[in-house]
Each structure stands twice: as structure tokens, then as C-alpha cells.
Length: 458
Ligand code: HEC
Ligand code: HEC
Image 1: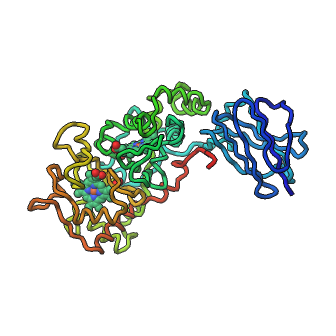
Image 2: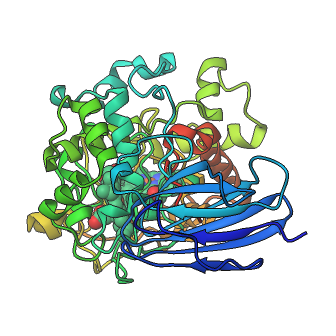
Image 3: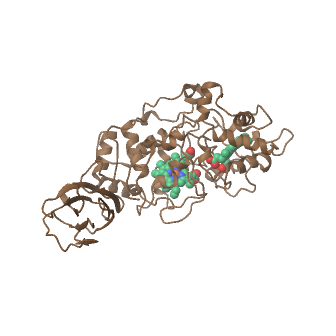
């Protein structure tokens, strides 16, 4: 049986039905301009797609008689497109569908049929129970949460929505999450990220796991952002990445009723400012905490959960076997240094001046922030320019490839001068890689509270 007829009425509910056909959409497009399409995959399912660059709310109704209509869904269109498969309601099949736009029903907020899907009660971001090892003084000293921006559940929830919202880019094509992908440890599988108009940047997107703990408090490979609150506004305004102005952004967000609701919940006022956007994004980024990896379990059982290969890798990493000095720079359970910027001998002459390019200080040329190694196994390719495609290449580089240069950091200088040569065997390289992979936290990458809250209809 050919069950579904489709009708799009725009402007108002009372428009008369136009011609109906048994197979395809009949579309009457009035303002706002939109299109609706219908395909049927089986007698009781209708697959509907609405394309509406105005991002309005649409009410979807069905009827078996064309006389009595039942509302089956209310869709808030985001970034132009929404798609959903509907099961015919009520049974039996052979239903007609129509969608209409009602100017008085444009403030739909967080219903299950809304394209913005938030849980009825907020996820816990503020009171997450951390393993005992996270209360060590060396870790608490790394915590860069400012007293003026403690994380709250409502603040991080707003931050999550912003992080995934393509409205943050000028042409609404990319979100923070386009370059910082949860499945890839909040990094980008591309060596260099691509911005809103297809232009490539010059650096690899950093993974964001445990950014909350970095004692130097600075962000970016060259540490040019003094705080995380400063950092999160920069990609929005970056001419390659998102290309927005903060004024255009706050105006755009203020036009969305769901945002005024979220800002009120987070900060007690519907007024949207760049400062509050920054605070919410920083709260969300700080909440991206990896603390349930095999490494964390190992912390509780003296690494009895490790295989022999992972144990050897850990000993090599810590310098308990061989002469590697990894743990001097990748220190503490967050695998970051406490006070130093470093050069790890990737190249000389320097192609990217790193910190020196910002400060103009020659002794800082080629120095970079040491990224946390949490979830490093998920975020290939590696280094600030994404030059290494896998961890084996990284460890091979540390084994034999470190390049002498004027700013090479002391842990990588051999006792007699020149770059340190670890000369690891193939077996040992495999062991270090196996150890690095124990820092992968599958709970983090599967956790819905860090996932995309929008249904873009993809
Ligand atoms: C077009 C890709 C792209 C987009 C979009 C993007 N980023 Fe990034 N992000 C990067 C790259 C590349 C870097 C490293 C840049 C550098 O160091 O110069 C980075 C670095 C960062 C860092 C620094 C991490 C650290 O440990 O120092 C944070 C935090 C961050 N981004 C958060 C965000 C947020 C929040 C957004 C959205 C407002 C965002 N990014 C949008 C590509 C992107
Ligand atoms: C002198 C300090 C220092 C030492 C010692 C050191 N590293 Fe690094 N490591 C860095 C710096 C700095 C970077 C970032 C460099 C860049 O991208 O320009 C880095 C980057 C990395 C990365 C890539 C991270 C990413 O997100 O792309 C891995 C993996 C890594 N190091 C593992 C190791 C291992 C394993 C050892 C020991 C064999 C080691 N490091 C020794 C300073 C160090």
C-alpha cells in the first residue's frame, strides 16, 4: 500500500489543502521559505526532511481522513535542515502528513521532538567524583579553574550546546566540535583543520582531555592564550576557523529563545554577553575529564591490570628501564610538565617558531606547550603540525630522530652533549606504544554528556 501523502502549508494553519498526490510531496511555499520532502520506506514509516534556512519551528501533523489532524512532532530547525523518520501515528498506515509554520509557536525549548535534545535533568559536571590520585597536591596545583568561573551543571550544559552549535561560525557550517571531535579525544583526525570557508590552518587541533589541569594555565601550542576563558573566544573570531565577531555572535544567539533560557539557567539573566559565552565554553572544556582509563585503574591496584608489554612500556616511559626521560616533560597523572615550556627537537631550522613567534624571544623559538597525553591513542596525527601519523612513528622519533638545535630542552640532551638517543628495540617501541594506549578512556569518548546535543538531521 502507498501510505503517505504529504502536504506542506506555510504561513498559517487555515490555508486550504492543495493538490495531493499519492507518491510525492506537494509543496506550497509561502514565507518563510522552506521545503519539505517525504519518502516512505515501508507502510508504517515516513521519512521527512525539512529544509529551512530561517531555522524556524515547524509543527508536523498527520491525518487519516484529511479532516482531523493530530500533531505528531514539533521541530525546531537548526542550521537549515532537519530530518526524522516518523512511525505512522495513529495506526493504521495510509496517513497524510503536513507541516505548518505558526509565528506564535516559535519558542519551543527542549522537548524530545526538538532538534536540540537536552536531558530533563542536567548531567553532572560540577560534582564528578574523581579518583583518589587526583587529590594529590601535584595535581591540585595544576587545576586552572579560576575562582570567578567555577563549573556548574547549568553552565557546562550551556557550554556543551555552544561547543556543538554551528551558529558560532559566520556561515553556520562548523562548530568547535568540527575540529575537536569526541571520538578522536576531542582532536581532529586531519593533520591540519579546515575552517568555515574551507581554508586550512597551520596547526593540528589539540585534544582537550584534562585541560583543567595545566599549571602554567596557558593555552594553544604557543601558549598565546593566558587563560582558558581567553582561549575559547579566539577560534570564534579567528578569520580562518570560525570568522565571527563577538557582537554578531551575541546578537545571533539572543535571537534564539532556547539560548536565553540556557543563559538564564546558567547565569541568572537572559542577557547574552561574550564574557558569559566564554565562561560557559570554558566550563564545558574543563569538564572534559578523563579519569577511568586502564592507567587510572592501574593507579589503584599497583598496575596489576597491565599486560607484561604495557608494564615494560610504563617502565621505559618512566626511565626505570633504559634512558628515556618522557616523564620529565609528560609528568604527573595528567602527563604535563609543571613549569616548563619545551622543545623536543622536531626540526631545525624551525618552520614554526612556536612560543618565540609570540614573544619575540629567540631562546623561545621552537618551544611548544607539552600537551597532556590523556587519550593520545585516539588523536592521531601527532605534534603541532600533525607530522606523525601514528604513535609508533612518535616513539621512533624519540628513539633516534631528535634533532639538535639551540633550544633543545635539557631532558633530551645526551649527557655528553647532542640529542639523546634512546635506541629502543622494535619490541621496546611496541611496549611504549602499548603503554600510551592505556591512557585511552573509552568512558569519556562514549559519554553522552560530552556528545552532540543537536539533531542536525544528518
Ligand atoms: C577550524 C578548527 C577549529 C575550530 C572550529 C576550533 N578549534 Fe580549538 N583548536 C584548533 C587548533 C588548530 C588548535 C591549536 C591552535 C594553535 O595552537 O595555534 C586549537 C586549540 C584549542 C584549545 C587549546 C588546548 C590546549 O590544551 O592548549 C582549546 C581549549 C580549544 N581549541 C577549544 C576550542 C573551542 C572552545 C572552540 C569553539 C569555540 C574551538 N576550539 C574551535 C582547531 C579548532
Ligand atoms: C623535553 C621534553 C619532552 C620529553 C623528554 C618528551 N616529550 Fe613528548 N612532547 C614534548 C613536546 C614539547 C611536545 C609537543 C611538541 C610539538 O608538537 O611541537 C611533545 C609531544 C608528544 C606527543 C604528541 C602529542 C600530541 O598530542 O600530538 C607524544 C605522543 C609524546 N610527546 C610522547 C613522548 C614520549 C613517549 C616520550 C619519551 C620517549 C616523550 N614524549 C618525551 C616534550 C617532551
